[in-house]
Image (cartoon, rainbow, N blue to C red; front, top):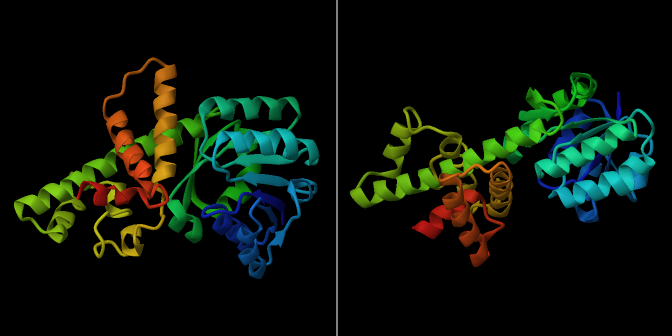
Length: 291
């Protein structure tokens, strides 16, 4: 049994913490919003008073935070200051490549093993323990972190050295965002020409139009049971998070002097939808904007 500190218990961090506890690990959590920690008590998960008390005796420190700003603050100002020597750092946030590299460099200088391990699978995968982890870092660090990852996910892909987990997540989510734009437009065109939503889904989901945006986040209510569209487009994966990930990809492309054509168009759709006050809705809800 490992002592595991989880920093950030939002829509993803909370169910990931629960699965770590179910696997027999001793889990202590901290979130700057205390209300997010309260429901975890019934699962035998302790709520720490602050970052220091969460990490001080941890074998593994797992972070699931909104942006690189928070990730650097937590690691530079808290975790790396108070964690025991030999602790393993796992950042499952989705952040900028430069931020990921910066945290890896400081972790190595201070003697910590670290992996960047963003996830795919959404809140449903986090709850079911079926996440896919995209990992950047040394093979030794990955092997050491494996007991925690296996408790939370069904698949672990070692993508390469430091930062390559973030690179994989960035590219993957850029593709997901573009796919949703195509799915939404496909359903709108079908409606205009008289084809039912159900028939389009039946055809596309079993042929060349199939993609994760269609089968897991179908924007039409009543077709896919687990889709956020059946819950008033409640995440799921929020529009603002998708927009953040699209911007990470676009920033990386700009730094590498790569011109992208489809991603900027899709990002503009999410930006417009967010600017209209819908940033907390699932990204599939852009269907409503284009309706």
